Image 1 (tube, one colour):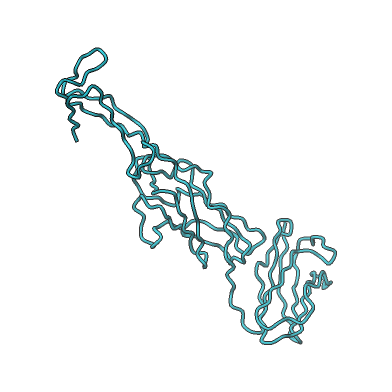
Image 2 (image 1 turned 90 degrees about the vertical axis):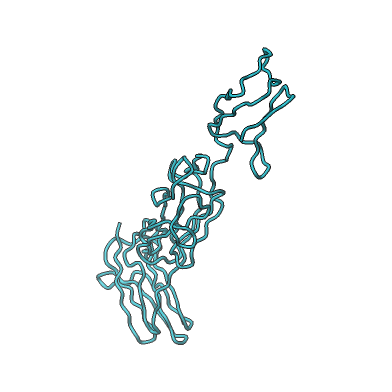
Length: 282
């Protein structure tokens, strides 16, 4: 819109954002001066009514987008990541984000899940992104069944996520370390299952023996080597009714890491004998 000035010696243009915050600079903008002759420069010359200011450039003064929150779904299906402002895939303030705009760091931490990746990104109502959203739903693909030990951390990829002014989110922004929720496989009464039956004790891996009791029962769990020699008694007491979990970290009764090879976990529930195989690797 033209700015008309009369009886003025000085033209001052102040630009502020709609929230009344600090006046920003502006992207490649020009002003056309239309004055009746009273607006003069230092030499006393009036500009023509069609004169145009030099281009004024800037970035609107917007701070880079930051991650302000992250919420993991109870079933580990997705993480809702909240940014401080609407975000785009290009520096021109346009374009929807995709999976290449994020990096994900997964740590097993001795758990059962072996890998996590990003399968897709959407709005938090699961509709397609269009650009400018401040909450991004990051859908996860998980290999194996998490046991509550595994963690993920999500960050913006370098120079891939931008605000409307073209300022990139730093790749040091992070959701923080997020622990995956344990997803327990249903176990029938009297049944024994093994989770994570291939372990590397040097990496902190462990096996989880899970059993479900109808009532309190005497339970003994012993690890044997291939020759039938007892390696360690993991559990030897009366267990309560319901779900029970026992961990073996691949160590013998002296607390030393066992040699690699096949081991048998024998669970005695009353007079019932359950045998499961575990492979120790390096």
